[in-house]
Length: 140
Image (cartoon, rainbow, N blue to C red; front, side, top):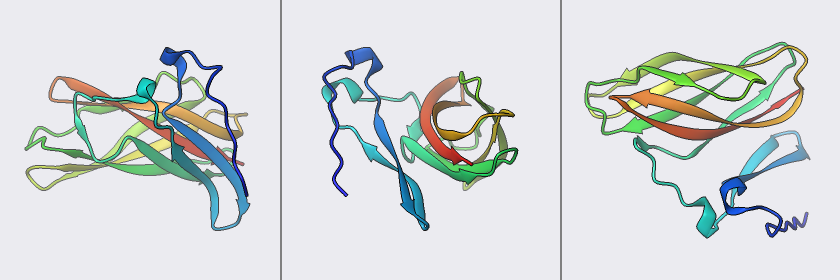
């Protein structure tokens, strides 16, 4: 496959950090590609293990999960997660700390009637700070 894209139509404040690609390969239905551009530089308030998460293929009416590491939190822990996107609900279902880093598991529940590729921010809240992570999934 050859992928071509043109970023000239995006104003800087609307430039996506990632292109989300849906494929026909049964072992890789959806993947991300980082858009490296001066408008996509990101300096989060929390030290994130990564800036993007794949919640996978979620059946219509079902739920999915993704994991995210928040580094250098000590014993503070993560107080919660949120999203501004009405198509999904998110919930922090587990967190495991090693005394320095926290491994979080977040549940993603698409709203009834939602299908297709979803790309949305999930904000992690911890120690009076917050940081968004871009999350994507395929609902079918």
